[in-house]
Image 1 (cartoon, helix red, strand yellow):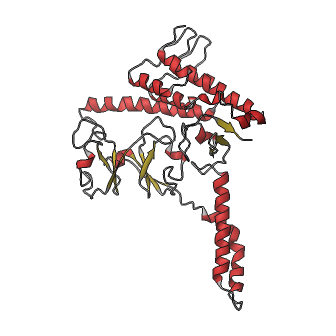
Image 2 (cartoon, helix red, strand yellow):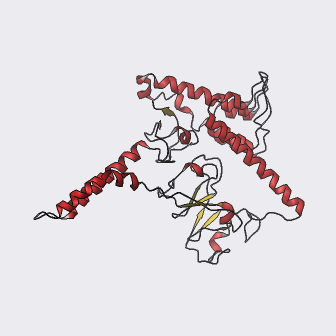
Image 3 (tube, one colour):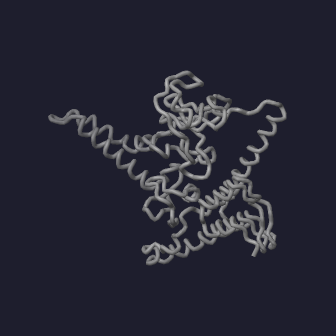
Length: 344
């Protein structure tokens, strides 16, 4: 059937084998006897898996059982598709039925994510050629100590990335700002999509746990749940050019203040009582505010904080569909996502 090892790995959802083959230089655009590339297989599997989920939701008994046989996908097929697109898979190649990979994907959000991953890959290939033509090699990603490995260690509290994890323990002061280095953190893969390296520093907490594609989806740090005031791109952390994105000042207390404002006169009248103090009424307001916050946390997506939670995982935690399709691990308990269930 002319299928390659990459075809079989994608078809069986073996994510680690897919990554191993891609890193080993496997051709991502070889078609099988039907003209399907591995990206065709990944998106077809994703679509069929979504249809099976919709059928499962209609049967409450099956939903309670969890359908363990169909929950065998340890990693999301959407993540595999994004990984292939981000490593050079052709989005426009057609099979023998005249279908491109995007024709097999009815999810518009996933199509946009695939196009962005493919675009980022193309720009990464064009920029080094441009710098080579000028004779000035781009060294912003190069370790400032050994010049052999790439920068992958975040210095705190300054937030700069100056060297690799091998050289970082020997550095006492940041090589960019000369500030004393208190702690060092190795930059791992993005906690949301799990296929690109984290490259956006969030402040004020100072964590770098998401890539530039997933950063626009979040308003709280996915590591510590702290509110984000600004986002710093990787180029700025390396001492290069770039623009820091300031987040709008939207506090979660604003809606609660407007709701509990009618209670304020009660606090004033409470002060006129013989044994009344404002502490009791203030504690009531704080309880109401906490209850409103708890309701929001239960209904809103914990990742983006914009959309309602309409997708749950087998672990019991949930997100919105847009964020959930990108994840291979639960953002709350870090368990592998074996099954996604849409709520209606």
